[in-house]
Image 1: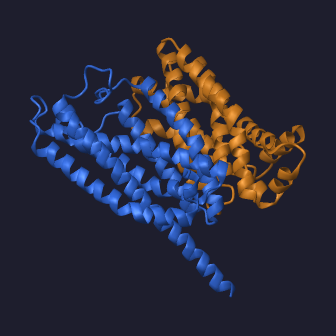
Image 2: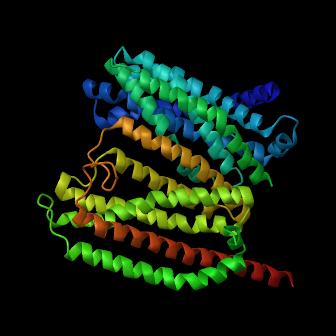
Image 3: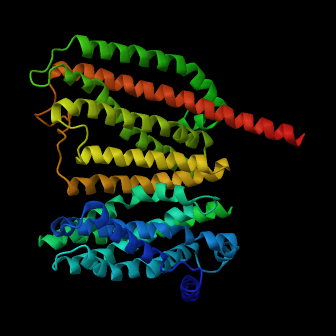
Length: 218
Length: 242
């Protein structure tokens, strides 16, 4: 498992690995929003938590099809399926790598982009915390979606169609947590719900993803 | 005699061929009866006027929209556990019907909401949950279309249906948390004092039964079509081999 982890991380950071792409995408989305809604500070401050959450979610979505597609193309996935470690561990590891290479950088970049959107000072901590708690769920749900569509030639668009409805609860609680934090309201309910979704996804979805991969490799 | 007998496609085709005209006829009679009763023989509401009568389409369609997903969940589970092809074909057949019911619910709601709430659409929990349900149906059907091998497609869509059900329920409560609503409470619950008056309730129940029968009839027709197209595919494959 550690070997798989370090291999995938190394692959992601090398040329053509696509690390940074989602960060750049996140940056561009955030920069485009003020052009769309106008530069007025008060309004930007109000919508900043939601915009940053949606931006992070889309940036996460962008890199999902890489989770299994390359390994499926060159046959690595077949080897992993017959390897002594269970396929459930493989899918969980893949999701973890995806989180380390997209979710974590997005979380760290979000406060910086928050400055661009005039995010209130109270909001930075809650935005970072909600992203840190929520993005693992995004990666795990995405890994499940990627496992469903791994055998398809052009699975990218279908993948988004399947995964986006599954992202809704995470987005609601994450953005709500960041918004309440920015406005100085109580945040414990959305934080706990977000944590619940993340832990539930991490506990259960590796099994669903592994089942989907077994079907696709049959 | 058990329900598993109908897992045999031949047996299913025989029984459904016998049952189909009866179910369809009963559905047509009940629906026409309920709608005529509802539209022409119930009084106008003192506040809502005649727009109240859209309830005879809106509520049954909404019940069917959620009910269809539960039926798909059950048949998907049967497929994953017992590998009966008829079961998963019924789930595949039900999805477009459920999606249509969701759309009917959303559209009739919009038509009613425009004069009553003054808006076609509001981000109310119920409305939002139905929109999300619509997206789930869309994804489920898209996955069926995308995969060529029918058994792979059946397995993957069933897994998606299971996971999607869990997330649909979470979404339902998430949107409830996210926005308090404009939509009125349940129209037909037993314990509430605020449900609709008896004058409207009886034709409404009839319409719900009619929609239920219509759903059964449509699922039977579509499942029979799916089984036939499977057979056709098998015959074609055999011909090519020969």
